Image 1: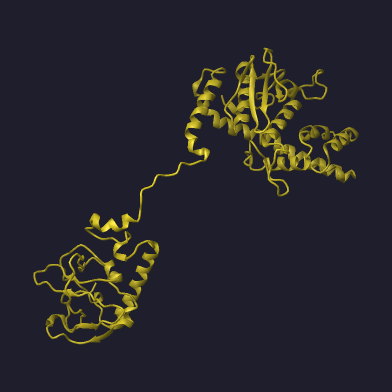
Image 2 (image 1 turned 90 degrees about the horizontal axis):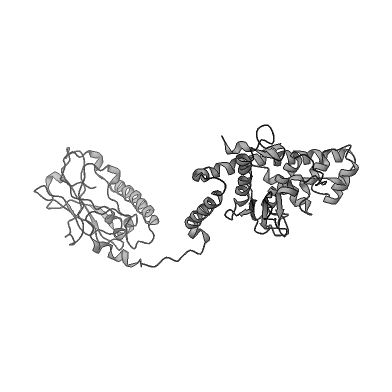
Length: 447
């Protein structure tokens, strides 16, 4: 600020003051605050240099303690120059009309303090010009942050004391109350859908257990189950595919690479080269899902990455050769269900009734258009009632349990299947223990 009080050393430097002009009614007053740093003093735009011709001259009626004063001849750029009037009774000093950046400095009145250092004074035109230029840059940055303001004094980004509602009326007129449009996205009812899904799941699980707190562990069980599928099935499967492809190349059969050869060619090679590559026949069982072997193998590789099948999409799959997934390709749910059933096929002992080796799949998995015989009390299986989008149900004790649809439907249905084996079948699936001494999958339920 430009102080008007007498400095401690009046003879050291000359203080500058401006010719007085009558203040306009309604304007805030500008007062010197001793707590304000010298860098925060008022400043004018750099354009004022071309709009007026500063001349140093002594005013005839000035006080001796104020020394010489600086007066300006207004030009075309600024017609109004703020003035400072001295109040003999110690009241705040008032400022006249303020334009541009000058309106930025409006502070509550403070009493005059005599502790003014020499650094608080502007003693020459060069210092004043530097001061005005830096302050103009500050105001320009503020205006960039509030581009919809018509003037600095009306901008809400400027801090003004004692503002009334009338001061904000012009700003508020630019905004009009409007009703928000209702969102068309399904997520608008996400909370209601989650609540209804949880209630539906509780009703289904009530037929299996009376423990209402069971669903609190469902997310943890699902994560452990996904990790188990990834570590136990997918990762070893990818490693075996690489190993078999390497062996086939060494045997002079580069045309029989996994992911490039057709499933029929691989089945024929499994019969002919069984003594040389004994694992080829077991590998073919995992790949016997889609005629598009290139996509199937590539998608299994993608699902095996990340540790928890992070790229899993329950009702779709991955891109293939720059083309988005379509219904001619298997969904990720279909791939995971197939490899899970095939893995348990390899763990269950052979059954004379199922010479193809699909003991588990034939007994415990039914896929539409086939339908399960719900009148058979011994039937215990997972039933896929829909292909696209995939949906799975559980058949147990002549009752079909349908868990909520969605991305976790397959995992939750398989979890219920395994939970029944753990709690009602003593962990035994036929003659195979699914616990620690066997398949070791029931650990996902904890103690």
